[in-house]
Amino acid sequence: MRIVLVGPPGAGKGTQAAFLAENLSIPHISTGDIFRANISQGTPLGQQAQEYMRAGQLVPDEVTIGMATDRMSQPDAVDGFLLDGFPRNIAQAEALDRHLEEQGQRLDAVLDLEVPEEEVVKRIAGRRICRSDSSHVFHAEYSPPKKDGVCDACGGELYQRDDDREETVRKRLAVYHSETEPIIDHYKRQDLVTTISALGEVGEVTGRAMQALDAARDSVAD
Image 1 (cartoon, rainbow, N blue to C red):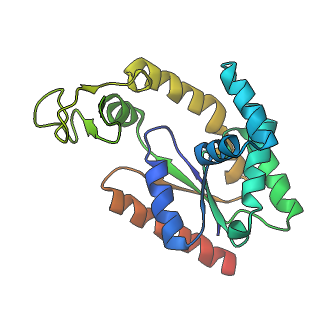
Image 2: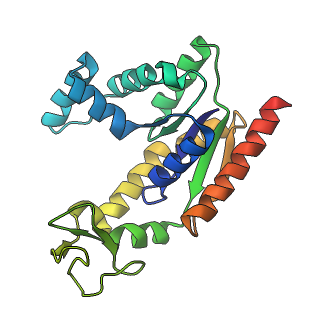
């Protein structure tokens, strides 16, 4: 299957993408991973991306599209993939459509993970990270440390990243609504979108997503 996963920041896309890709035996292709891979390997596209990033500028769509389409063309993605973080806007969605058409392929499903805006703010703004080991992550409400401000695992100081502050989260949501959300309507016109609630336990959300993908696969088979 060829799947696009879309949803606001804090919807759990990365977590769900990893589970779904494993269940379906297809590669999970995330924008962050392809950026890091191209930059670490020193590819021409990676070098271009790094130049923009060093200058504090956004990486242009054509560079992002080039890296994404190259990754989708790798042998492990021949029979399908799950895209997480791409496409991010209408221009990227249209480029993906053209790429797949050129390959004689098409998307099978677009999963829209739906979360109320205030829940997104609560999820992200409540995160607390250990300064000593950033893999130790807590949440002020959902998984608080035993002692306020102190990491249970190593005793390090817990802090809130600037990116997790409420005002920053709301700005990120505004960008999502203006730039990324329109791709949902783009794919609705192709009858590809299934919206599922991303509230609840991780396994519950994965179950809903797999049901939606099974229905999409059955529809394609018919």
